[in-house]
Image (tube, rainbow, N blue to C red; front, side, top):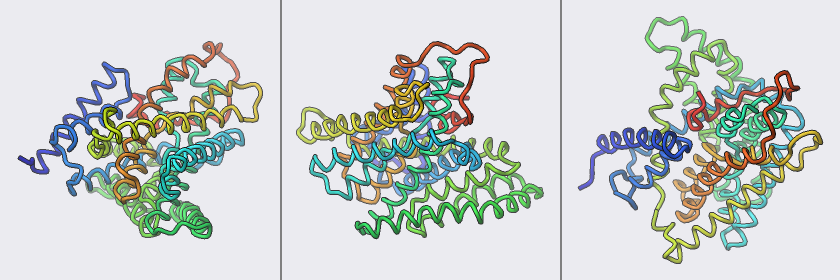
Length: 411
């Protein structure tokens, strides 16, 4: 018997929190991985208690994705993007270029169409720095030159990755794959972000100031979320991914005097909806496609292994190529390896739009999971001794640990 939507939602929320707690306490894994695995077990190819095709749950998951990128934007701050430095921009740009190129070559070699390969490759290019920041903090190396370079590069990497994902999403949805189309959509994505900064930098403070003066309960946070939803909707109307608009809204509101208040309120809302998104991501996975006893299962696992090598190698090459001699380049590259919310959201968009086949989607989720798991031990192996107090730090300092704090266990 199929459970109704409210019961499914209740199961999703309870199991998500239980799985996240078990992942962090018992398995020492980021909570988000527990939520994805729980979703895979609850989905149609597992227990069948949660149906990925449920439109109500799918809508709540989309709200969770938008709120997650709003939270990321609030933690990012547009001003910091202008101060990441040449070395960080080099690492971010090379990381995106190498990862996309290697992943694209792998997928086209396996026989996938060029548009599908490009979309999947772009989805795997964005770095999630929360887990890296947690490991650096555990090693008491968070303020070393390597750690600060990684944190700064991840901020720029998020923006580059979002622009690229927005472009390939627009191309895929409109089925227009040509050099002029690529240039046009990339220009549109950049223009949207630029216009958002110019117009929104004046509009957002005025809206929040008006809301702050209202006596109605939760007026400020309500107006902030409404602004985010409008920005996300405008991004969709422009042919881009909604998460681009949500991220831009977060960056703009991070510049206002209400940043701290909004972070707390948005986090409370995100903590409710974001687990629904990750559980639904897991529920969309067909576990039968990962069964090594079947030909299609072996094909998905083989694809995942090759993509894992491409994704890790691309980020390590970016770190090794950084034009700084007195820095642990290998450590920088490994620090850029973890993938998270942006990659997962992009993969979910691709599956929902019919761009990605189910086998490739499952392989991409596995890549994100394994990238997240292998980074902490590799960083511990390459991290140097704890720096002496007063040691020279790398500037600028970018506190990107809040970007995925909920997933990495960072307070």
